[in-house]
Image (tube, rainbow, N blue to C red; front, side, top):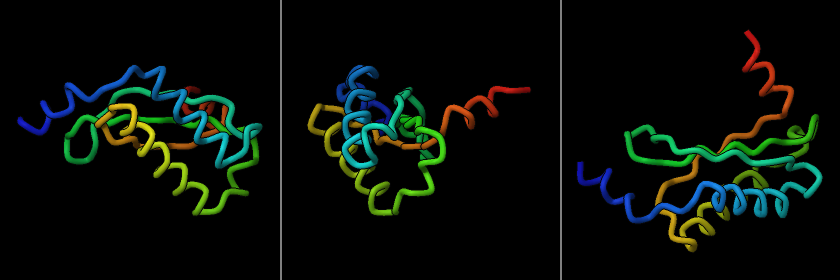
Length: 106
């Protein structure tokens, strides 16, 4: 239970988390390619508090990204969150609006 408590003093506002992810995503993936970011609290595979960061991309751009761009985005988001006082690990996911609509459709 001690591990869960260590995050309670190191959380920033979800709006700030999204702003950081948008800035980093646009810098690494292109300003026109990142439409928005949705952040919400979650837990990681070990049950620790984490952040789910969904980067919504423009249609048909994901195939253009190289592993380095995606990895740089993760590392830079993590670093900037830490610098802002956030201790939860960001779990970053990418989707287009169409993919999100497919998920929401019955």
